Length: 206
Image (cartoon, rainbow, N blue to C red; front, side, top):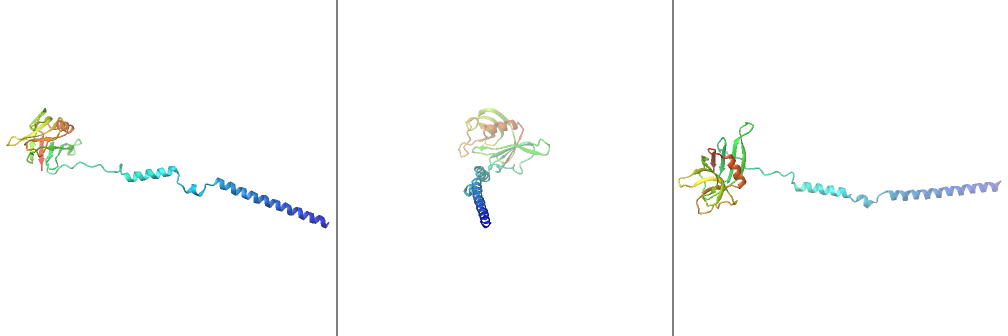
């Protein structure tokens, strides 16, 4: 009986040891499997390509300011420049404004404004009116021109008017030739021609 008891205890011990060994092997196998499924620390710290592209796009949008930039505005119509349908010419700014009644009847509005290029002599500030129009011809400076609208001739016979040189040239204000041509681009000359009929007021301001 004593031998039988001892053999039974020995078998139990061997069985328990085997079960423990299996458990240890299973634990290490689970750890290895989990390590394969889990990304490495270096990979998890590295930003994705899409995230980098997003950051780059964001930085570019914030730094450029292209879409959010404000467009420059045209200079305002000078004060004390008359009323009604008229051409306003500012000598110092070398700019013209075409003013007409607002379409909604709320007052008046600037329909167009643009730079002009004066000759060596300018008209005195004051109120004038378009006296004649010439579709094509030669200016007082000898340059072929189109769409001339004349509004004044002074005591010396110098003629003042807006026109466009057909070759796109502009006068030399330092020239010794005394002329009163006020040149515009050909596009602006078309706009002036359509607006300034005979009798249209021209207000010249300093």
